[in-house]
Length: 103
Image (cartoon, rainbow, N blue to C red):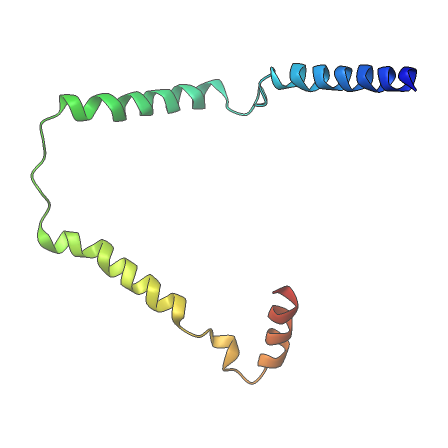
């Protein structure tokens, strides 16, 4: 029994070492970003961090320009709650069956 316990302990220790050694490696593949895109991302990040400190503050935009995001949001909410056109058509039974099985 002790021999079985020792062998289980040894195998679990080996598995534990294997998982710890594999966790030390970077999980990002080497070719995920090309060198050009990495330089572009670093440059964009640096400009977003440095330019607001260097440039003078801008005046506020006109009031009508501030209403554009609100109008877009209202339009998206209306479209989200609007019934789809397939539910009111005569061939809606097949469309309803497809969405019913998907959901």
